[in-house]
Length: 157
Ligand SMILES: [Zn+2]
Ligand SMILES: [Zn+2]
Image 1 (cartoon, rainbow, N blue to C red):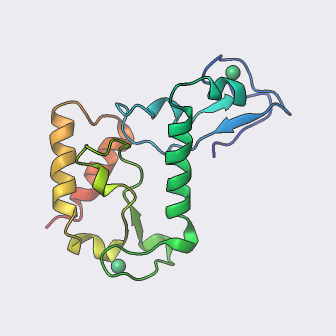
Image 2 (spheres, rainbow, N blue to C red):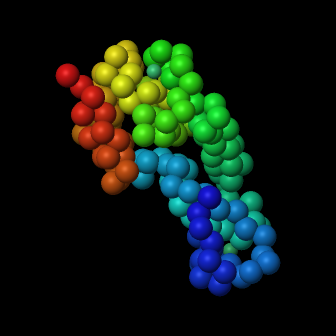
């Protein structure tokens, strides 16, 4: 969730200040790709009624909650070795990449790995190639999006 400071956060829809006591919905920066249809929700806060007026509100809520559920600290299972990941410094997660099942990135949503297991993971190279391809064709853009590509590159040998 975004940090809401009373009287300081602006609603991403109506742009008015969200006042103390008003019902609100807030998201942390869970979308990496600025071209993703859910980008408008990432790292934003909304009056609850403004949020519900958005066509993709339920989709955003579902994707956000799925990410929080599957990648919560208690359930971090490594895709490569099957072990529980308990050390936050030894944790890598691909996060939310897309909600479009026909997209090549869909299979790589929310993959969790020990840092030490990333190089061995068979998805590393295909994920990296797909992201590079999307970047070149303008489908994968933004600071956080590029950061993921650069991070993955450090694991490639
Ligand atoms: Zn509003
Ligand atoms: Zn592992």
